[in-house]
Amino acid sequence: MQIHVLIAKFKMKKNYGKEAVKLHKKLKGKIEVIFKQDVKNKNDLSLVYTPGVAQVCKEIAKDKRKARNFTLKNNTIAIVSDGSAVLGLGNIGPEAALPVMEGKAMLFKKFGGINAVPLCIKTQNKDEIIEFVKNISPTFGGINLEDISAPRCFEIEKSLQDLGIPVFHDDQHGTAIVVLAALINSLKLANKNMEDIKIVVNGAGAAGIAIVNMLSCVGHNGSKCKSVKDIIVCDSKGIISKERKDLKNNLFKLNLFNITNKNNVSGKLSDAIKNADVFIGVSKGNVFERGINKTMRNNSIIFAMANPDPEIMPEEAYKNGAFIVGTGRSDYLNQINNLLVFPGIFKGAFDSNSKKITNEMKLSAAYAIADSVKNLNKKNILPSPLDVKVHRNVALAVKKASKRGNKNGK
Image (tube, rainbow, N blue to C red; front, side, top):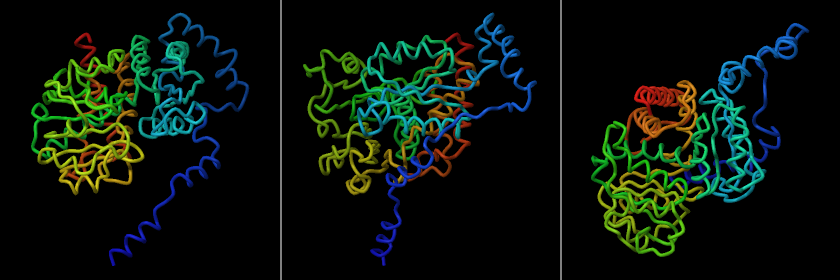
């Protein structure tokens, strides 16, 4: 009986790739521009265009901040990508990245009420990308950097923080925020404290470094729990330690020495994972040697987020004693999905007229997500990203955090 049920489920499972190709070919683009004011007569035309629009232009020319009051800048972001690190597909270029950015624009509108324009650009030069974003900033109220490879993504985002509008690299901070939310709830179930655990992060790219930075500052800015004190980071060559001579030209990995690997452990992932409480994978599929998570501590937590194949499949992780397992996939329980973050964090930034997205705003978003879970249990550590209420909770928490920051002069 069980075999027949499994076969039936297998037959019913969709080929999402094939179906997506059909849908995209039919739609020829998933988003479009619509107008808010119809043009039915000359009076309408005179108001939305010439001659009436000239007065609006004069108002903005006298005070450019009024562009937020009179134009789409009030509630529109640009999704900027060079196509260099798209999903799990790698450097596939701007044209191939466009379907992903269109999809993201849909999600911004659906769950945050925010207009988003995909801009996939034909350059992977760091300075040219920075200059491009600066040049388009008059039109947009915020910039979402997307699928730009490390280490350029760090430098690009950092260089744009004084642009006067929020600039947010979702692959870094969106991932870090949702991981923190998942960890907060998982630790509640495992009866462990943030400051007492050992975490291994596999992957030292954009997401991995952002996760480490966030977990190291959780206790700051008045948050509810203390920071993680024991983190080890691994890349494709093993543990990042002071013994590694190949890191001397990688400033971003060198900076990890200040906040990770307090005992200067060397070796492979299998060495790092011993006696760890938590594994966070943002690397590539199937990197776990068979059975190595058996060496983790009791009530171990595994977030294997490589796509499409996790670092370890949930079935294998549970078989070897894992307490909680999350992945980046929608076909498994406990999906750790950035969609829980980006609509609400931009909505909150817009509603508070914030010029930046601060660490306090990010931490507030993580706690809002964690607190939005109903019926918290080992198979339900995060809310559904399809629940509109969650995005409202995130936006409200971010708005409040921004106002606190403004009041404190941050």
